[in-house]
Picture 1 (cartoon, rainbow, N blue to C red):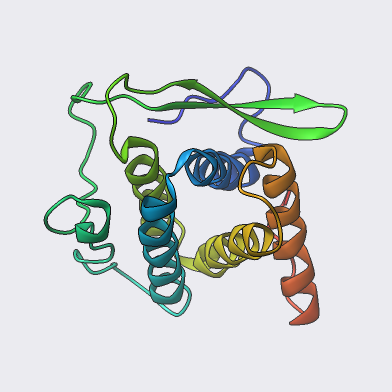
Picture 2 (picture 1 turned 180 degrees about the horizontal axis):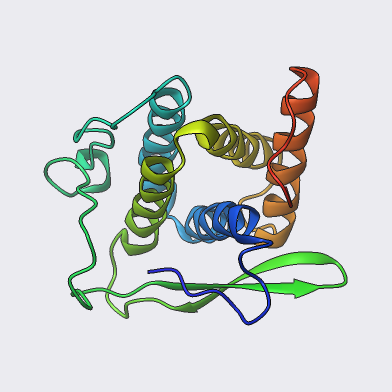
Length: 181
């Protein structure tokens, strides 16, 4: 579920959705063990490569979760109330830019943040047919940041880099950035 902060939506809705998803992915990357990081990176690469050219309905097997230790593929379903595990990300607007803050996560070990980030990215892609390329470029920017930087770097730095990456790549292709990105 996405809850807008007072005064943020609809003016910042598209950008906030992207920043929330990328911010959660940045937190998940920073909190992943070495083994889980490789599986999460593979899932992110696969997701980005499959949504960028996609039009219309997305396939149901978009993100296999076996690499993260969960059988089957990710299934994003309509909200049915709180589930077993809860991951909450907040987006704070500061003078330094947007800061993603992980407000809640399950106490038990497991790939909860990684799966939540993948689910949020898939849910956004399902609702953003014309902006799927923007989501894929954001994922590409995150992965580029973490390829060149320590995974313990602040998620806000990764988020800022990913959003700048989206703007730069779209500008290089002669396409406008969505509002607020």
